[in-house]
Amino acid sequence: MTQFEVRRRDGLARNAIYTMGEMIIETPAVIDPLSVFPDLASRPLSNIPLQADEEFVRRYSEPENDQPIPVHPAVIEGASSGDAVILSNWHTALTNPRVYADWVEQFISSLPPDAARYAPASALPSNVAMLIATGFDLFDTIAVDLKSAQGLFCTPEGIYPGSWMSEGICSCPGCLEGDLREHNRQALLHEIRLVTALLKRGELRELIESRCRSDASLVSILRHLDSKKAFMDLSAPIARTVTFKAYTAESMNRVEIERFEDRVIHRFSQDKWDVCVLLPCSARKPYSFSQSHKKFMDAVLGRAHEVIVTSPLGVVPRELELIYPAAHYDVPVTGHWDCEEKEILSRYLTSYLNTHPYRRVIAHLEGGALDVARTAAKNAGIELEETCTDGRPTSRESLNQLDDALAGERKRSPDIVGGTLRWQFGVQVNTKGMIIKGRPPERKVLLGRQQLFSIDPGTGLLRPTLEGWALIPDRYRVGIEGFVPQGDILAPGVFSADPEIREGDEVFVIGDGVRATGRAMMSADEMIRSSRGVAVKVRKIKRS
Image (tube, rainbow, N blue to C red; front, side):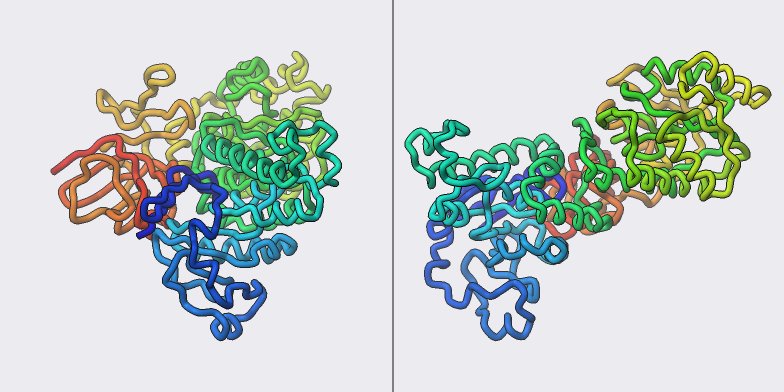
């Protein structure tokens, strides 16, 4: 009897417990394959090339009842929840980035989400972070032992001559004893421990963007995976509490940015203003806490809708500045946006202006942000007014010009609750009479004396009470049947889930005689297909 239970996720990567009889392995992990899977020693016809077609695979492969279950891109079948699967020759996929990304999507979409994935003879210190980030759990030392036999010195940064052992680069037991094989094994184990620690913190992506620089193929794999937006969106959490570090060009392609902007463009709406002011971002987050934005708000005085133009996010309406990743990102500030950056941001702003028409659009911007606004305005066919003529948005002259441009416009207040509800749940709610009370971390949304929502201080998202869910009909529902939960809801008890649910989303649980509110711990797809693990962390249950 084998079991595989995921404890934490970070994108496609998992930290899990694989149980096989009395053997318990926390993944990601390096294993001795013949000790864990002794059947591999005598298994015939187990080295079929990944490029083989279905006819070839079916002719030369044999069904296996022992662990691990062999799977192949042409034949992905036979694995059940709790199994371990083996993808023989996976190291050959690393040299073909486009196919690698296609196969990762194929395997993860087809295999049970609670099955362990073993990539034999593939892991090196320089590529194991990518292997883990693309969904693999189990590894061995075959690849590093081969490098040792070739006299090569392995590090997370790359592969170098064995003579580097004497350079004092590493002080592991292997280097101290002059044992190249031991060094390479220790380097692999150390890298896996580092990756696991960052995976648990939700910071693996930043390491991947750094580590992939050791090999052009790894950079290509990351870019090909990032282009699969719908697939990557399924595994990306709705929010993180850690800093979103956008330090490389690849950061611009992260699925969190695409999701944020897609919701800004297609879900978010505002009906208070017909005048828009485009403002620059600030180093301090949320923007309104910065000195520059306090000056902007004093100049605008609620007479226009404030929309921040920023890299890497693109467009952030003032109502959404607390929502991840708008309040959580950090970027290197150079004052320069490159052409690719401007093209991406111009596309976001063009789409926003096309779907959110204003009578007037004012650009209180400089530098690259102003270039983006001009391009977007041209693409959207609107006339752009500019109020920052001296190149300094916070100068007294520029602020006076902004004030003058808004003379005579009607004052209004931003609808933070309504804007967040539209972005988070895609629903239009009448928020008249609702007020936000309290200070972080205890901010609540009340209607009269009834609490409808609390505000998550870490992510800026709304957490509906059971009464608040009445305002969000038929969205983000999880269906259970046949039991009354006594605590958190496990995946086997879920029979239906809104396909839009992602890890971290607030959800409403409905069952026979019970209603509950809580946070999704996995995506809807995993809830339906998994046989183990917590699906919903319950906050409150009401029995009827």
